[in-house]
Image 1 (cartoon, rainbow, N blue to C red):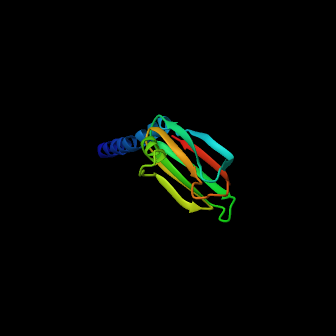
Image 2 (tube, one colour):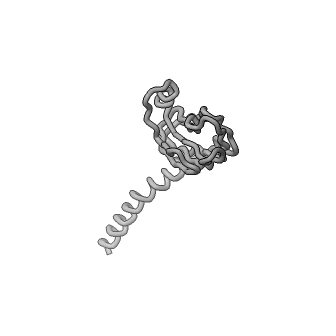
Image 3 (spheres, one colour):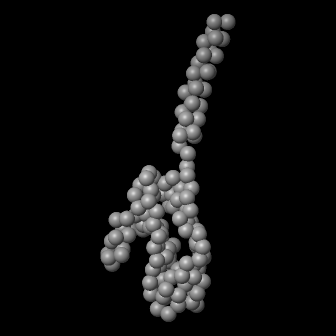
Length: 141
């Protein structure tokens, strides 16, 4: 009978060791979702448009898009941190966290660090056609 009590104490201790931290994290590690962009935007031929979100901690930029206009109904979409965005807008070689390539539609779920992060809709490849982009972007942190 004494061995049974010791076994039960160990069992309870192991359960508490694994369950309590999970419950505490679940309660304190809540994720918040905020909508940054939802609707139709126009990206003029030969230009780009950007939107940003400020993160107080690590999180995700989650979005989708669909382009229309021109012969290809296409757009380029990038997600960049502030440093790479500054480099890219100055004409330098930047590293994107997400690069869609030239596509009709797509989606992304990009892990980002704290700080300012950008979503860029790029139509610089089109000399004549404006693009209409239906898009939604959310911040999850």
